[in-house]
Image (cartoon, rainbow, N blue to C red; front, top):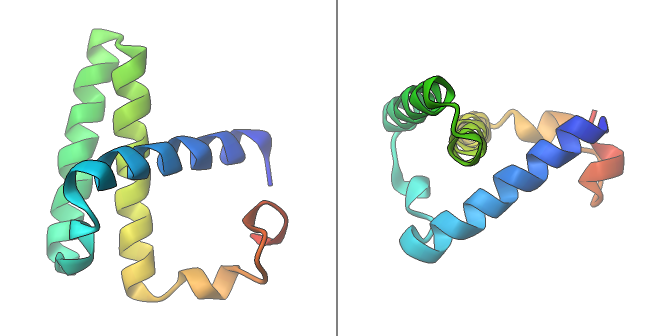
Length: 93
């Protein structure tokens, strides 16, 4: 895995931990349309953070966008096609 991809995955995981502390796994009950709406909502927040030059908010919202995309991919059942073992750092392709 590329170092930048691994770093972004760690950002996503940290954001998941922060959000789960407040909301649990509420994303699991959202419809695919609702997940897509959430992805766009977070993309809008990311754009505002970019315009403001706020690095912390850019990191937060970029991770949220990534997580929303992962939720959509998970819901569609496509993650299992790209995972071959228990160590994502070594086995994702």
